[in-house]
Image 1 (cartoon, one colour):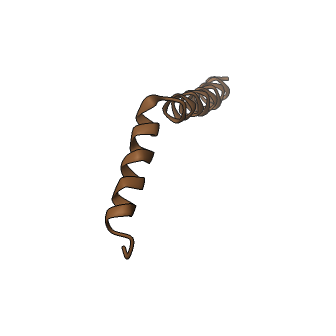
Image 2: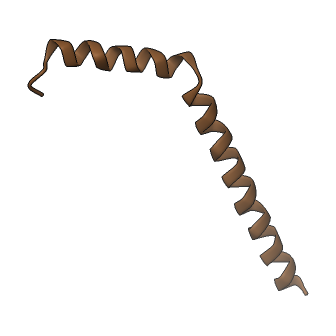
Length: 51
C-alpha cells in the first residue's frame, strides 16, 4: 500500500513539474525580455555578419 502511495506522489510531482515548466517557458516567450534579446541578436548579426 505505501509503495502505491509513493508511486502516486512521484507521478503527481512529475505532472506538476511539466505544468510549471510549460508555464515558465510561455511566460518567458511572451515577455519583453525575449523581444530585447532578439533585438540584441539582430544588432550583433549586423555588426558581425561573418560569424
